[in-house]
Every structure is written in structure tokens, then in C-alpha cells.
Image (tube, rainbow, N blue to C red):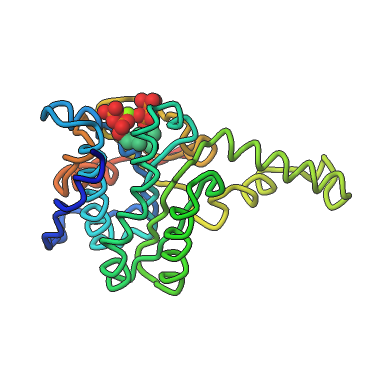
Length: 255
Ligand code: IPE
Ligand code: IPE
Ligand code: MG
């Protein structure tokens, strides 16, 4: 049964120590947290046990990101395609933000983390919407890491929303078609107020984007690991940061 896992929430305090080899810090790190199901399967556990462990790991990785003064951490938690999964799993995933926040919100507030969300919140259960909105409100004035959760997020849905918004403005004569440029689109993205991701990490060995931030990742550096999300550690995160600082970003130009 799904909620038998909650009593085992492990809130052990960890201390993250800064590695001074890491000198170039990306402003915005985006992570496709993949492999929860396989992590569980490997241990003979049901998939939802992997999601629960993955949820605890979110807190740990937030601490690491905050220690390194990363400004924004965007985490892909549920895609617009994940509704295709069995109902029991979807229901469990829908409850996760609420469970996460009921356990960790007090710590996140203390740690100066600002919670935000991208995606279509309307389709989430009312109680999940409420928990997320409450966390956004309670952390609204925090000035530390922005923890941006992508929940019921799909990049194509986001683009459809952008196109609709532009079409509305053209119809009401606020905009003419020849005025449309990249800025017009940027301003309408769910991430309009955030810098573009500098580093994208995907766990679990899959090398694809799965409908994540297609526009925003145009010049992002990618880093992949075979580690499943629940096992993605501080050490792995540091490896990604070390790799990032070796990259030469040219944006189409020359060095
Ligand atoms: C990532 O883990 C979490 C979500 C997509 C919600 P998965 O549930 O995709 O785990 P695998 O990829 O099946 O192992
Ligand atoms: C991507 O993982 C979505 C999230 C991590 C939330 P999936 O497991 O859904 O991606 P695919 O199906 O392997 O592409
Ligand atoms: Mg997966």
C-alpha cells in the first residue's frame, strides 16, 4: 500500500561541505530526475518506494545546490506524459509534493529557499495545488536558492500556451506579426523571469529530453549519469559541476 512508506521518512541532517576545486558555479541547474522505478526494482521494491526515496533525495540535493550558491534549481518531477502511467502510481506521484512539503517546508523556510513551480497546476488534485501554493506564498520573500518544481510540465504544452498568448495579443491589436521576435516568446514562457539553464543533468542513463525545456535548453551544457535519481549523490553533483567548469561555451561564436 502506497502510504506505508511515509512513516519511514528519513530526516537525518546532512552537512554539505563546499569543494574549493569548484570555482565556476552555474546560475541555473535543471535536473531530469529519472530512474526512481528502476532503483526500486533493483531492490525488489515497488516503484513507489523509489519515488519516496527520490523525494528525500530532492531535499538533499537542494541542500547541496544551496551550499554552492546556485541561484535556481529546476527539477522535473512530473511530465505531461506521465499521466499515461498506472493510476496507482500517478496518484502516488500527485501526493508527493504535499508529502514533501509537509516534511520539509519548515527546513526549506529556514534555509532561505524560495519555492516556485512551472507546469499546468490546474490539473493537479486540489490538495496538491493548495500545498504548493502555500509553500510558494510562505517562501515568497526568501532570497536563497530558487527551487523551481516542474510538475505536470511539458515543453510543448508551454509552447502552445505561448502561441495562444501571442495570437490573443495579435487579435486584440496589441501586437503585429512583424513585431514578434525571440523576446516575445521569452516573455511568455513559464520561466520568463528566470535565467536559462546553464547546466542540465539527467540521471538513470537515458540520453533524451523527454519534453523538458526545449526552448530554454538551446545553449545549455548537458551532463548525463547512469546513477538512478534516488542514488544521485553530492559526489555525483560535484562531478557535474566539475565537468561544467571545463566546458567552453561559445554560443555560436568563437573563443
Ligand atoms: C522518475 O523516475 C520519476 C518520474 C518520471 C515521475 P521514473 O518513475 O521514470 O523511473 P524509471 O525511469 O521508470 O526507472
Ligand atoms: C522524464 O522521465 C520525466 C520526469 C523525470 C519527471 P520519464 O521517465 O517520464 O521519461 P521517458 O518516458 O523515459 O522518456
Ligand atoms: Mg523514467
